[in-house]
Length: 89
Image (cartoon, rainbow, N blue to C red; front, side, top):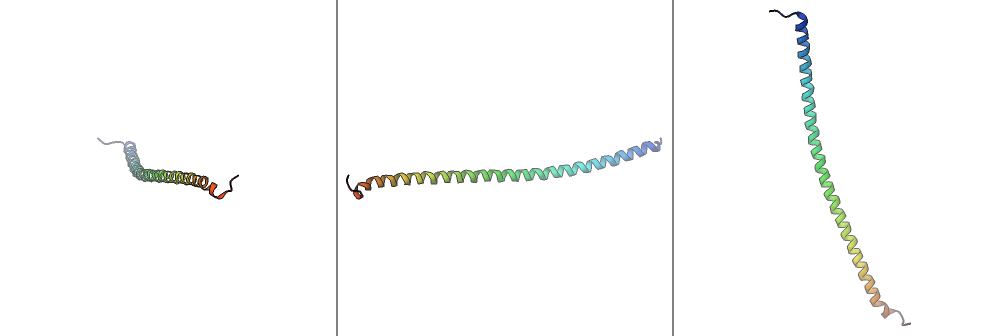
């Protein structure tokens, strides 16, 4: 049995379109894989950045707490030494 030329041409066109769609799909899959790797890298950087920011915040709070303790101690020392240096009234 011999197929008409129009059917053979249609099948040929469909075959070419199918090949083109498969090629596009492969390219899209490759791009998606690449983007997933990039996303994982960015997420890892975000985790590192958040950890660093948390560490800096904790260190800043510790420095502030220490400064407050030093200031309070200095006020106590001034209060203790004041009577020795100011004349009695």
